[in-house]
Image 1 (cartoon, one colour):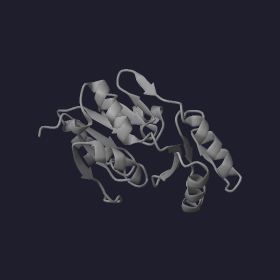
Image 2 (tube, one colour):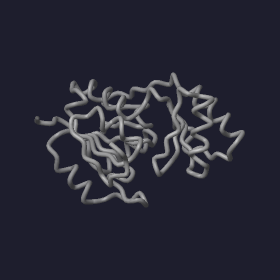
Image 3 (tube, one colour):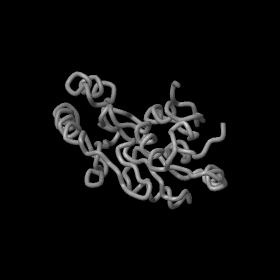
Image 4 (cartoon, helix red, strand yellow):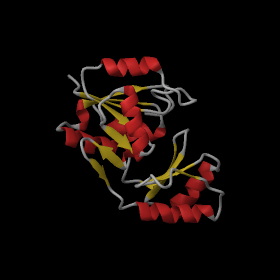
Length: 194
């Protein structure tokens, strides 16, 4: 099969642990003769900046699939209210520090200074429709209906493609759904069971 596009995670995949860019990865992405989509759990302005720095053309998936951009910005704020309620609930049990609160539209990002396993168990009981995802760089309170896989499907549709037309490259638990819906998977760093 000939693949028509690539979707690549950022943190830990094209960056080192300290979040500095892996220049070899950037060169490899720039050399491709197909569109490259940047996918991140981070906010839209970060995704746009990475795309600009890497030179990939501005097609992005941000907030773990909650926001996509391919000529137009598309996002669904239907789940943010539940995420806010979950944040308030968890705040009664943990000291939480929000990340980029003013810029996040579809989920809540948290600093990694809490017992994620315990918080996840509590969240599952009170808010079964939500996930608590630790990417190794941040913790995300997000809808189970939104992930990088759903984001990839939306981007593919906007590009006139199918998700199976993509090669997906990732390394983290928040990449799993993106890897599952793509046509070909490259695991970077092998931190996830797939």
